[in-house]
Image (cartoon, rainbow, N blue to C red; front, side, top):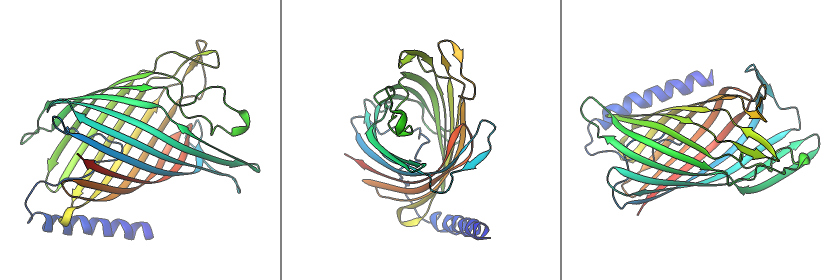
Length: 298
């Protein structure tokens, strides 16, 4: 019952806010979604710093058939992750971005408590704005990215329950497309990214991770006084990996996430606070995350 009441309140806020917002002038600003890219770029010679903070509690897992299994009593797993995004506009249409991630992992199972912290894999992005938004069509931006295997990925301790792993050991180039359309008081964002991991060696074993696809969608709703509401969906699909040319069964991964959030913004600073939940998956953890980000433009 409380879920239905929450949804009713949210719908009322959306409708009421729309009438008020329609009376205000000026283009709204926001921190943007947590995972989905936005197509507009930061602008020539503009430097933007955006940290992200994730506290993720794992409540269970989804098996190879997509069935959910909760943790047994006494078991626990969580992660604290800090990401730093840096955006720099080379021109008004070309942008260079960088992502650095540091995380703390904790697990408790069968009386064993383990934890580790370290640097995760690092990303470099290049984005080019192909088309400005017009009356009918959205902003359209192309994306090139590569993941560098800077996180620990081999010589793992079998007694650490996997918490000492901070990456997968592979360079991963990717290509994508991003679209944003503004229809006051809404903004719609969509991206599709295709990743092709390169061959690597993990503890001497030749490994090829499966090709992966991301589909992300986010809706922002702008309210008066700089506030906004956001709803985001993130889908991920990766095929089985191969080790020494042999396909490893049940090593594929897929999941669907939902993330409602509320934000406040002005021209110099934008903030967003949200809650992310794994709705469905396969060979993946079932997570609940508290997430926060703030953007500062220099």
